[in-house]
Length: 463
Ligand SMILES: Cc1cc2nc3c(=O)[nH]c(=O)nc-3n(C[C@H](O)[C@H](O)[C@H](O)COP(=O)(O)OP(=O)(O)OC[C@H]3O[C@@H](n4cnc5c(N)ncnc54)[C@H](O)[C@@H]3O)c2cc1C
Image (cartoon, rainbow, N blue to C red; front, top):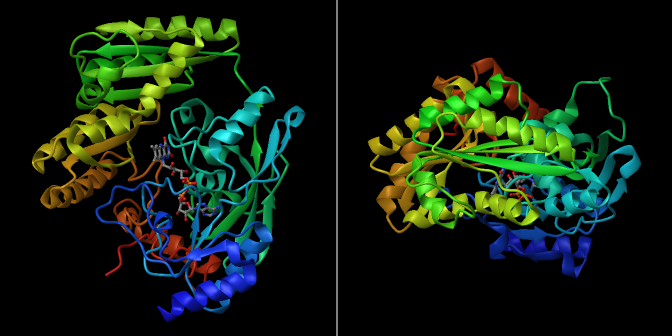
């Protein structure tokens, strides 16, 4: 308690009265992760108004050996922004300006606290596209997206957040400010520190601003939806799309229980009882999008029960809004869920989908998956009764089996959400010992005192 009071008071003296909240402020103690009972404890919450104030906060924490937990929009699904055992939560929410868009040069310089959807809209107003579209884009921040290397449906064609980052402005664990990269489009001079920071989940440095790449926005997007009688038929259609060299912007899937949970609200015509669903999106100039939509229909129709190809802004917006609601619809089915983000090589997508359900069965839990088919990225999910303690415990065991499955199939335990605290130590299933040692050495190099987001992105489980 004495630590909390002194941390808050000293930070108030440093940052100003209205830039520090008590460590008990609930909304800064959790995120969107569904891990059982994950709620943290902090000594103070700092809301620095600019990058220099972020650096001053970090210098104070370093001088007093106080842990610091960077926080963006708090939409993370792995507990990365949750303060585990005291320290100062450093929320980047006030770093929202200035935003510099240079449409003629296809680039932007943005502060870390800018909300993702805001950047997308600003780019779009200039005829440009910022493609990364993680699901919570009206709450997540660019800094959080960079720290998690967030994906989303359009990562299939356009890549995950990291592929859009040209440069970063950072505060290191010592409180020193540093830039890497910048407005340049190419830079191979040094080791790729930029890529090391991207996806580091606030454990190596705090991102205060970024140089981002933009591209000319497609004139038109035209989705194609196809319903199949089973997983095999759906995955065969996916293989046909890929094998024919077509390049949809997004290629998503839902398995049978996920379709069942969400189909009632589907905004178009759906056949009775589909067991698998693919959603592809064509984009480009009007002519290109129309041609690709036709080619996608041709590739996806064989073996399908029905197809649906909406046109017009309203129906297309409704389709993607529906897709965004699949997770919540699955939650509603039983009141709770534990949802993961494993990735498998594309040729094993059907195995991953079916094995997810088998794992659920083994642990006495209904299971389903949906996700980014083209990237082999499954949101494998165990549906639980949120009030039933025993089910939550069984789901945690099922998740362990799921990680082993991903690794056995040649994949990874996380394609989007990161390790955070939820998957702490899971990397040890996947990487050999020398790689784990390097991972730990990198952390020590950037953060010798271990004060930056302690307990997160751990390569090995702690005793
Ligand atoms: C409904 C829903 C749908 C989602 N869909 C997707 C999806 O499709 N794809 C996907 O990839 N993710 C998805 N997510 C997960 C989440 O939105 C992303 O991980 C997002 O990038 C987190 O951003 P945030 O700003 O909320 O970060 P937070 O949750 O606040 O933090 C996440 C991690 O980043 C660190 N961090 C945050 N800001 C900074 C910073 N400025 N500098 C250094 N470290 C920082 C934190 O310490 C933490 O470790 C979804 C989440 C929800 C709730």
